[in-house]
Length: 118
Image (cartoon, rainbow, N blue to C red):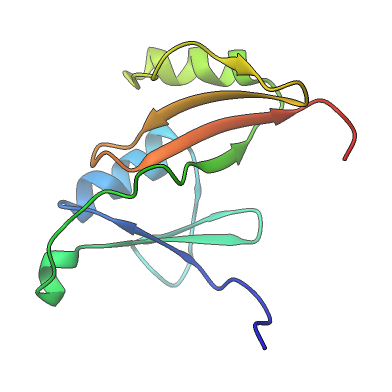
């Protein structure tokens, strides 16, 4: 029945601020047809403002989007230099490294580096 994942909705209280974060801080690829959509590989991130649809804003919590990087520590250092704050130390799960952080609206994100075979 379900044939794919079309996009991930990123709630925001300020779409322009979020756009700057995802484009300039994280370096995601801008969608050529939409000002508020960005790409990570085959996954589209769509920024939206719930208040514009009469809904209450709430950040996405405890569902950390795992952003694949080649080197978690190097990526973390680069983001920290840009002012991104991480929640605790990078940790090793036994198969991967993870470093947790949030976007400016408090949506949970993660740097992820798998080192063990699938």
